[in-house]
Image (cartoon, rainbow, N blue to C red):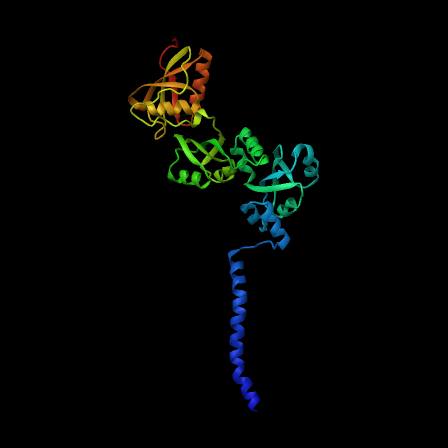
Length: 318
């Protein structure tokens, strides 16, 4: 009887302790289910392989159970076209582009670890959804692959960013977060410099509509002294024409410094003349020939900051 009484007295405490243990075990699992988080379980060797060959974003995607494909930059030990194209063609991987030892592949999270198990693969880096490639200039895309293939992707490169409109503090913070710094701005067109490996991060912003390479001349900042600006960035040619240009609001100011910046960005030799009523600006364009003048005007019309452009005077020889 005493043993039975002791058992009955102890049983409520056992039940309470058992309840706490079960709560500690299943509560995290229930929380994970409620949040919708599902992860692929990877073996220790696979985890080690990811740490050795994949960048942080790709390591994160390897554990995802999603099936949507995305682009990855794969770097091999030898030339992709000469030595890897046949093996890649036999696999289920899609080659989007290749240059030298690097290729842009389209794959899903489940294909990351099998890709890394290829002994000829040196490393792989996340790029992003395939659609982002449409906003990357084709020649810059090839330069990106070349840099990765030669392990120089962390060296600075000059880029021209085109935004949907005039960028501000939010856009600058995103540029800095990608590892770049702003060199010059001309309305919705910015010149930035930073590592080529930061391009995928730049493309995460849907405010950027296009990225292309910027020449050395385009990166020259406007003069430090606003009272004595350099009004031209190109050598004056043998022909000139006076133009009337109206800029879109809050883009390029009709000032000597503003015109010098436009000239530097577009590679069209311009000289500030005066401001007009109606927010229009009078400038003089210089070129080597009449044909070059016309081509330069088409370049200016294509600038996102230009609302309209029209000749103001007949062409004349200098």
